[in-house]
Amino acid sequence: MLRWVSRRMRRPGWDVDLERPEGDLPAHIGIIMDGNGRWAKQRGLPRSAGHHAGMLTMREVIRACDDIGIQCLTLFAFSTENWKRPEPEVEYLMRLPEEFFRTEIDELAERGVQARFIGNTERLPEHTQEVVRQTLERTKHNRGMVVNFALNYGGRSDVVDAVKAFAGEVAAGRATWEEMTEDSIEAHLSTRGLPDPDLIIRTSGEIRLSNFLIWQAAYAELWFTDVLWPDFTRETLYQAIRDYQRRKRRFGGLK
Ligand code: V0D
Image 1 (tube, protein in one colour):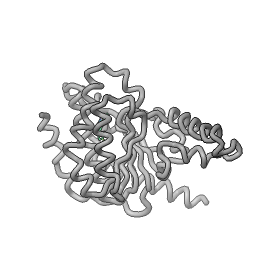
Image 2: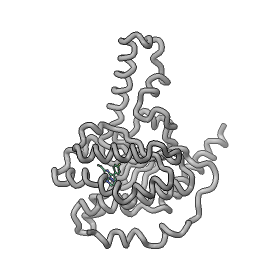
Image 3: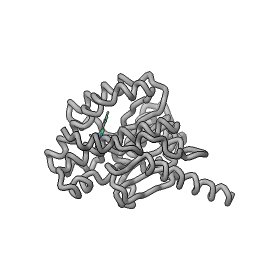
């Protein structure tokens, strides 16, 4: 199925080691993978073909980040708003984790990638949750790059849950209100233990965060491109990182 998409992804570019960005790398990159539907429409294909192509891009971006030494990558795959899509499309999306797991888990394990999940995964279909559990189980002892899948994620809800969790500790007498600080809230966010994202990338031309890591992105550099997610390449990623490095240097010069 969709063999032409796989062949497309095997074009040069992904295989050749393009000029790597030199200098300080972002420790944590977040990506809003937008534009799969538009990519498909431009080609007269069903939206599912765009999502499938987007999954292949996701695989290549995980490889690229691991190759250059990124510590943590958060991928915004399904937002809480995506439920409003037509049911067959949501159903197709919910099958992608299974396919991804089937085709990628060995390589992820080999690379020592540790998978994590943020978002309300309990609301996903049982078969999708099963893949989430298997992926966690297969990669929990890995100590390499962390790939954080944001599934059914919403940033405001992440903050509300963290505040609730802290309030619960106060109610239980394990903490006091005076101890409620930015650090104590942070310690209850879904991303606890991970560095804040230094760089957030959004594809497909929208210039918004759309409720992605809103607390954690307070100091992130934001990088937007018109490139649609299935057309995003290793070179696009390097471009974003080079721009990030240039901005950091400029900022450093001011201090
Ligand atoms: C569609 C582009 C991989 C964005 C990427 C359920 C939208 C392809 C996963 C995945 C999606 C999830 C969990 C996991 C391994 C892989 C995925 C969704 C959408 C939403 F353990 N791609 N992918 N999940 N798309």
